[in-house]
Length: 196
Image (tube, rainbow, N blue to C red):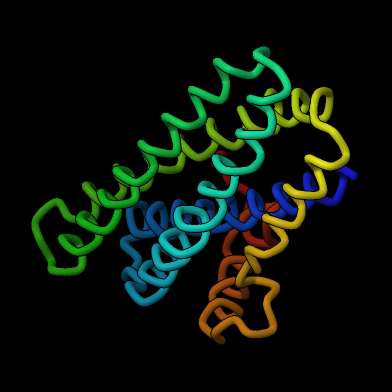
């Protein structure tokens, strides 16, 4: 039962990882090569972050995965507290991305450096967050949750409708993901390898 729910959660993590890789690639390209920023693509990436992980994925983790695990065991209490705090901090980090991108696009002095710093901070937070969920929380969930819990979690996450896969998704998401697959390093995409 848990395999389907975990698969959806991990696919959603891969979606976010693709966006993070894309953001870092574009910033690093601008830093090292003086590449002209594609603000339309950067804004589309932030639009995805606003509308998918922040409004759907993280709230569903809180309401379903974390809630069920808290009912079944105290072994996960500390990690869930940490993950919830990371969710709350994520909103601040996303707000900083928007503010710094606005300044960068407006041509403010140091705009690229400030936006790059915000991207690096956000990326580091997301890598730590997803690793904590996949390496610590999901194994605990596999151990303690019931089949009925997994059915409910799977249904909740299945209703998210990741824009990458939705037939109703706006064309911008499919175009965006095509671009990200081209620039993101393996295993996310087919772009050049990087040190992250």
